[in-house]
Image (cartoon, rainbow, N blue to C red):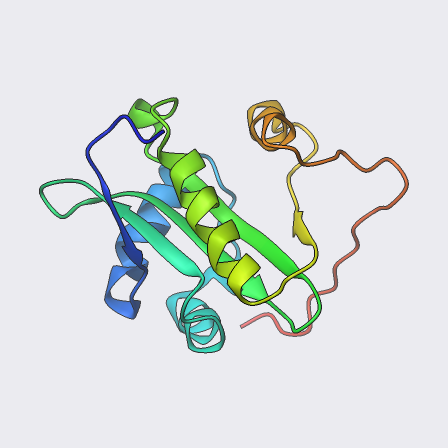
Length: 145
């Protein structure tokens, strides 16, 4: 239950600088692929699954990028303003995202986290996600501009 008065809505391109600031305050590592131009591409490809939680003054207090590649869905950068964490905002964003994916007939959702982010891992495990010990995540940078 979202105990803080927030409205959930689609994340817009105009929201991206504010969302980036929120993600940084929440401890998410911002990288080259998190430039506004890159995030605009995410919104273009996933217009219904990138969401914001907005307070009564119109400030973004939570945001998530939900992507779907046609086979699996992935959660990127789900975060809530640190001082409002624990009020159900993150859970409400995830529930809305899952509802949208269910309507798209998505079978499986994944989430990636830094190994040391115990609070994020605990949040997802509490909501039914399984910590996988049988896979590892690899990445490769194709351009460094």
